[in-house]
Image 1 (cartoon, rainbow, N blue to C red):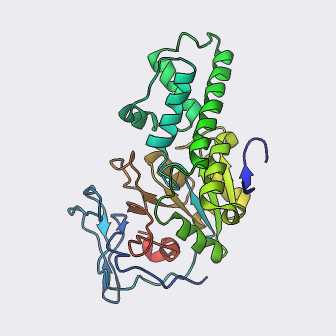
Image 2: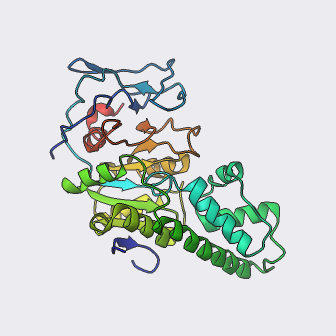
Image 3: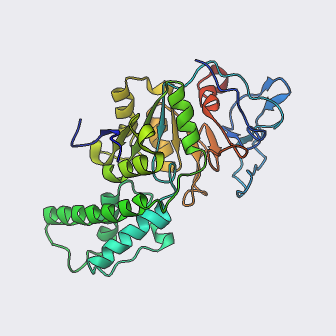
Length: 323
């Protein structure tokens, strides 16, 4: 397993010219972006319209569709200083068939009489962090009979459950039973080739995140990616702490960073940190409110179904995209 740079409690401009034909037809920009013309392509606002991306449901009104698939995108004069990825739901769609299954297998091993179904787990995902998720659930529904009574002992109990859950989850990753989402490797390769710093910022356990980066992205990429994960910050998303820490550690300005997230709490964290944020919706987050996102897609995408690339990330930093 490759040794990525990991930030956890135990450790302290040219643009791409390659774009697919549907580059802009899949793009959703913020509704208050002003009208612009680039050659025959136009970016415009239409609050009354509903837009749909290929293979996806209709999206809520208040967003803008980028038109003219045959026209080239506007030139980007800059690139992000750092490209920051959430992990679960962004790099890999792990939640329903990865983390949820691992939680349930842990509960079964410990004979706790608890099962999280698909819908329930979707609600629990509104709470950032696996230990926090279990604690909130047991506080609401009642603690299992086998759980200790004291507060400190319960913290240790939760930590032991989470440790076992992480082991089971890592086994799934190491067997490569959960694939990378489309376009993830492509976008990371583009960033690394241009000298853009790349990091993964996740509330998940550091070992689980490292396993995903090392096993699925490979050792060559992993050694160039910094990981901020787990309890590296005391407050988890939607608090911006993890993104503020990433910018500080990487030595970049938050305003020069572009974040790729999949959830409303992740978007809130990125925007509160003063960063641009692109949302790639995942299975559990398709209906969440992303009105404050700088762009919303169904995925990053690989050619010929590419949705956006590094040049698009850079274009979000340009002045003309600011209302």
